Length: 63
Image 1 (tube, rainbow, N blue to C red):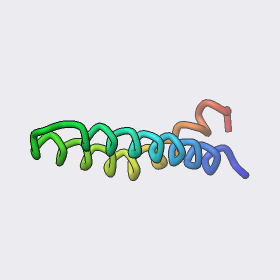
Image 2: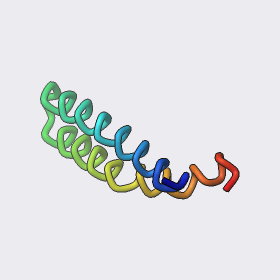
Image 3: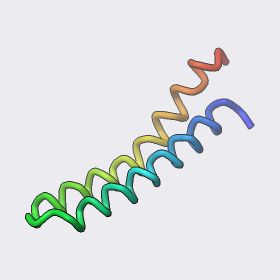
Image 4: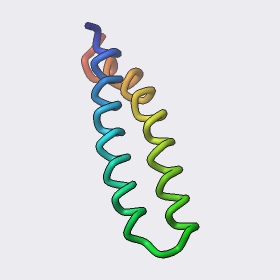
């Protein structure tokens, strides 16, 4: 596995953990706007963090 793929997988794991935590936080808040923003933030990180990891990991690994 190349560094890009490993970076994408690490980004995906972090994004899934963050999504779970943001969903738990969204259940605790009262305002519907805040719930919506927290859910959108979690979903956007689920897309963006693996992409960022794919491009950043080869730079860190020196490939």
